Image 1: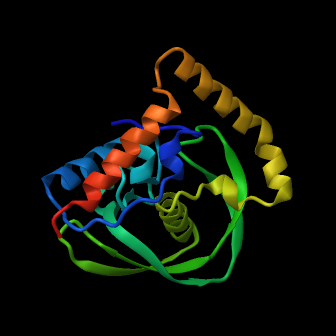
Image 2: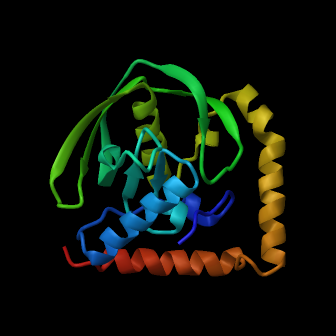
Image 3: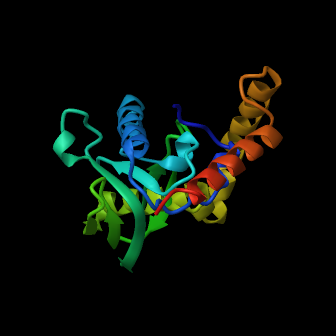
Length: 197
């Protein structure tokens, strides 16, 4: 398992709701947490590791020593947004890129934990930002999509560089062609839909 970088097509796929929590899902969640810590992130969504379902991991401290602050969340939905705040935001699929993004200051989220229990979480400031960022991922929305005209201009060159690096990696055979990736993603999505409920 590894974190894919922009413009990998998995980042634009809409994740499917999970209908079963099995050993595989638990294993993926544990691997995602380890990857998140290894890359010094606060959150990681399933699309970023080419998994087709609605699963995300969070630890707002980013500290692997504070395991009591981490969480694994399934099929999350934002029920309520209040206020707005603009702040710097980055993403593990865009290493080194940061931009000012306007988000809701407070959110109320509903999700399930690994035991299948429904949770309702109220978050503010950084935690609210992380929730919105990761839930966006599950809908194929990236933080660069949230930028205003000036922000979009500011990231234009770094995005072109990500695209060039990605194309070079494909030329070297390190990443399969997009046609192959799309077939793999479609097959994974079909497998999720046939999960027993």
